[in-house]
Image 1 (spheres, helix red, strand yellow):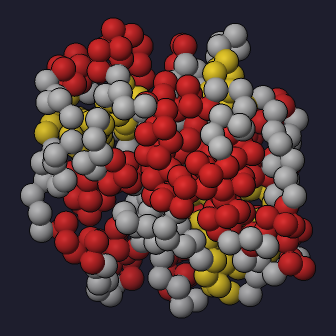
Image 2 (image 1 turned 180 degrees about the vertical axis):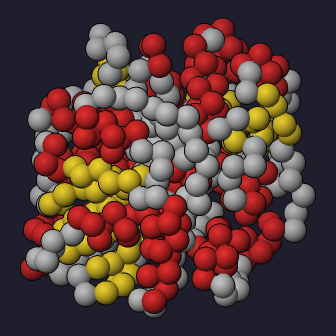
Image 3 (image 1 turned 135 degrees about the vertical axis):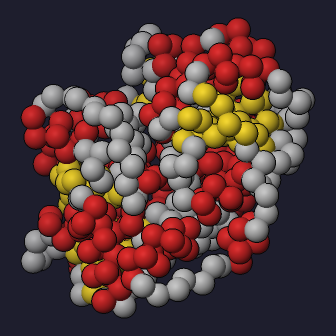
Length: 427
């Protein structure tokens, strides 16, 4: 499978090259220009690991053998993605049963496997930005992995305390930097790192955001897992709502549709950071200043993966009718958490945004799925405040809650970040 730089079409790379580089020239994203068609009915009858191995093999091509890909998937996908019934023809795809209790575990763990193949023993420094869950997933996937240093930037005071504790308490080969700014500034700093070619070469820099194609491809697999759990007679009427921040998750769902998965429609659900819903209506791309919300992992004004959505549209494998973009404000987010609780389902703000957007979109004959991207306990304070009832911590969070954070503060300034990178101890 050849991947093309969406900004510099002449730059074409293999899967492992794309994994190794992260970004292309001019900060361009790597992406396929054509897609295989799969035997969907056969795949949906298979177990998660076997099915995911076939999907990823089709996306990667012959650069890795079938046995290599299967082994990578087997080591990465060690937890389920159950479709939990919420009401008649309404379910939540629970993606928070991995080690860091968030959907990013799928992509983070598969990327760790892919990078090990791509680097062939070379020293690597992963520099990534997180709006909440990426940090923990990447940190745990690469924790104490030989030859890999990880540097995670996050907006100081703008992610939940428990999200933060999951990755700032590890130490060892994990460095965490609290940036005096918002997520978009963190993301911009990461892009500046890739523009410094000497620094990239010196430290062997890569990124683990969903800009890395290995993470994106891994996320495609759980859309197939969702459909496999839908009654066969309802599979042509499935509408999936995705809580959307950086838009990697939505892109993965659209790739699944391009591969032949019969998703009737994708709903891009955003919070008040509504660049895409406004763009979808007006045709004008006008990011505003990022605002803080209850669904902090979606507090992204300039989503980095949107060029990939545009590429899918340009390729003709999806159309505008396949996407609905809906903004859900803070009052509706709170209402969504409460309504789900009344239905007997404990959830959190991000899933509530997707739930409310889905309820606005769904028609009488459709089967609705909204994505549960994080365990409710990761947003313990918000959920307890909304519902007025205490929330117990699962073991993974209880363990790290009392540990000391090892992060250090830096300004939203490239020179400060470069100095921090150059001061890293060898891995």
